Length: 234
Length: 234
DNA sequence: GCAAATTAATGATTTATTCAAG
DNA sequence: CTTGAATAAATCATTAATTTGC
Image 1: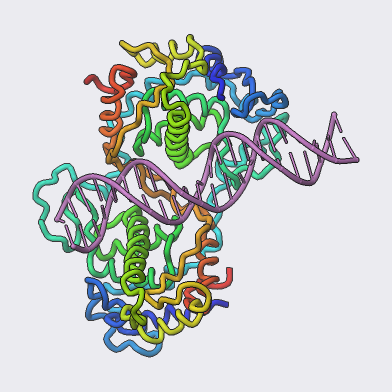
Image 2 (image 1 turned 45 degrees about the vertical axis):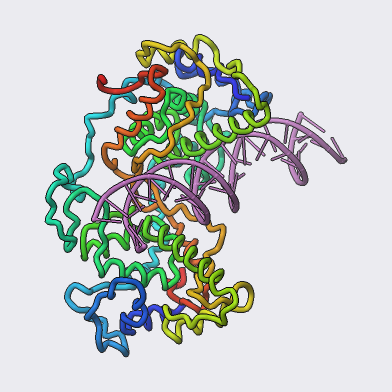
């Protein structure tokens, strides 16, 4: 089990703290000092102001560039068209969907950050869009194609095989050819079986999103009396 | 090496064919005749350059900036870590873990982007860290506390409550204090049974990570002749 | 005592589910 | 009912801690 003892020293004493042990792993005899990294550098940083954690609020709203005024959810132009008006969810345009599907069909499944960035930039020509939209799209599309296929496979368990209507002949052809052999040769959609383990940190954090702050708030609501860690009054 | 053949054909064929399925009529009118060579010249807006997606980008290793810390010359003595600083995974320091746990104990479960940003800034005082590390930490910690508890519950069907031996009294005390707690001075782990479903887009995408590009590459590797969509060598 | 081998933690990704806008 | 968004569960992967053989 972890011993939080150190924590105490941490908070109440200066940073140089004597880290008793490296990470958790109970009993760590050796770490006598290994964490040089920390200890060494940990000079004057001492103060750890909890308050700062408690009151970020004020939303520094880092950007506003693309974000824009969702503040007024009302009346967007209603239409999808160019940009999504309000602050609701992304409403892809035909072009965007088309491109995304194309990429998907082209084999892309889990674009990495660079790719996402790139795609986003491109797609933004056709309408408002953010990186996460692209990310989610691929996630959802992949998952749903998978389910769909599963359903189909089950559904036509005894049916010959569906003539991949989704893919152009030549296309599907090549597909089948190359991976048909091994596993499922259902021919349906051929998900190309995205590989299980791919390493690829496809994303990272960015500027602050929005006031999801409320979430935490609510959560505390539950923790309630426990830790009125909460920011502004309330 | 990989030829963009596929891509090319893909782009050159009429859209209806490939994207005919679902909704969207991909770029509808688009290249109705482009079928042959790369008469790219995409229409006005349609300038959607696939190449741009394929962009090799040659690992623009963006890092190198603030990393390398460990090898930082300023810390002569700190040599323990001779490893590549930025290449591996985050290795939290005692201080960082301590703070994170405190926040967790304080009720935080799924910090939003702002919070993550804030926390990251604070924690970076104690060592290299990125927003996603914070995000992951909470995800993992939450999940693992959950399983741990589940195991316990199952194991001890009637387990009353654990005698928090893990926390030092003073510690919890101070925490509470600092948090301006008004009630509940228990330092118990109290998982709080985190909330069911909270909506809160706690993150967003950010700058590109790094050469995760390889991932995609690999993927194609499999699809191989299928979709020589791949960039150039690299 | 040390270092390869083993194991326990836990950081990082991916996949499955769930929720809710439209 | 479709699908964007978000979260949780399941996995994969890497490092630190521990063990083991010399």
